[in-house]
Image 1 (cartoon, helix red, strand yellow):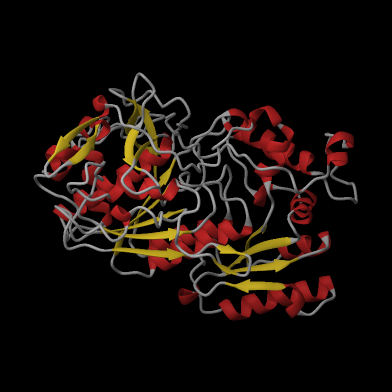
Image 2 (cartoon, rainbow, N blue to C red):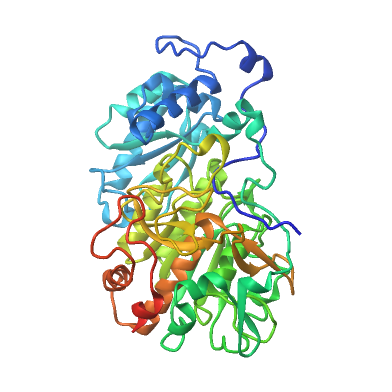
Length: 496
């Protein structure tokens, strides 16, 4: 069966934000003085042009008209971050948060001419962040002039749906990161260890099997933010705590709202299941791939429907997962192999909140094909609060996988692509079956597992001490490579 590779940034969406007539008749030139909102094509053209010329895009640098146009094209939803300073994101540390929020809501009420119940969607419990409905450009302009505003962003603009509709030849099946394939593993891609578990070839390249003599991740809890875990895979369920993987737990939550309520913790995509597998699948006699930290505890969140975080439901789901895991004192490490090509304020707040609670956060540097291959390290891996990871080819630390991103913000690499194109063996979505997974996704989840091994060996260490040990055990330490960070980690060295 054809092996699956999980592409973090190319999408299979169909257009629903612009009509066919708009796409055929619109003028791609952007007239910033026009009264009508820009088309999706014009908005995306501006975003792409900025990324290509500066390497990044942020709504705070957009004109009022561009921002309002994206709000208009995105169901009129607006995400607002407020505070007395750019770092005033934590409500519990923000003495004036209620007064600031009330002032913002009053400005919206006056400009929109409707009562608060008509435009306030939600007010975050932990963060200085609200979601509202805005109809008028003058409201956007007024909000951006307020001293207590940290950001004003479209809350539901579907960049990728529009981009994919404008690039029909770029569409690719499974390109959302989702897939339910299983595969017969090539015998050259694993070795077997007692009692009867398969060790992926990539683990051997990083000296992980030898590291297990010193640490197996026991006592450490990893939080996984992804698409959930398959209810059909018992090794990530009732058989998680079996064989040599004893005395640990797996807990599953859902923060992704589908309709009016969350639709539970179960993976409906396939991506999250494979990330959980490479991170912490049990070492037992099932004859299937084992995880890096096979004795670690795992808490999983179904925070999105796929790996591209562009809908309001997905962005809110990820934000909630970060704040929940941040407030869980047992969690030391958070891993997320999902993202966007530009920053999302509410997710950035969630990441900063988790970082402020001492969590060690790993995010995927990016995996893509077709129209997104001009992008460097994606968000939130691009944040200083996260450790960005990308995938490289076997036997290298500076040759990225065929669909992986690289750049100055990368912190670590993981070998996940062989010369013949085979990637990393993992558990399948279906019970008693295996599959392959590649890209920066699997590299990130594996590296989070490595961090669990280091922290389990040194339970009294801080996040900084764990991170320094990982750096010191990597290829390029102490000199950081310009595109691949510290490179590959020698895990045996990291736990000795």
